[in-house]
Length: 226
Image (cartoon, rainbow, N blue to C red):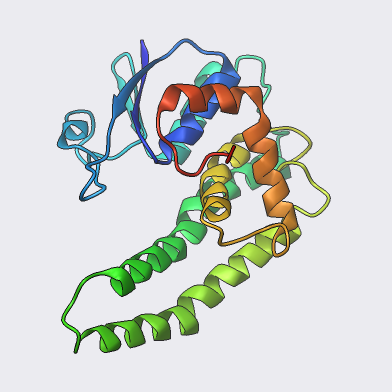
């Protein structure tokens, strides 16, 4: 039996979407974040030592990391090749975006999130200006310019395209959906600044399989706003 170990408000939502697109039989085991620490529950460590989501178990096989899970599910369950790119450059491009999402885009986004939390965290009044100053310096000199450069690259790539590679959905789209819809949901980008990215997110979120996955996965703060 294929089981998705699903954490609310997490990258796991894109795996739910893919499972619904594939039409495969699966079971969801839901895990809730700690309301104070926002961390995953320790029970997830029984599935994988790092205790993070998404993780899938398929019989005696355990697969962690979104990109690896996407590759495994497509290799194992996309029997008709509906999401398979053409061999050659397109196949290589899909692999590129699978790695780009977590290797290039997510690190500066996570750094920005951490610096935002530093500014909001309670601390002695005499420390706060120093912490804010360091945060603003790092954000202004490195993190935000890096994010801007990456988003400009993605925005240009999506010009005139519905999907990241070719004319149909591929693993690249499932993988890239999470960071981009998070940016939209947080108000970091808009139609005015990144119209192609926003249109991509809207296409993803309007698909019946996406909405079905959303209905099964519980709370997800980055989903479409009603």
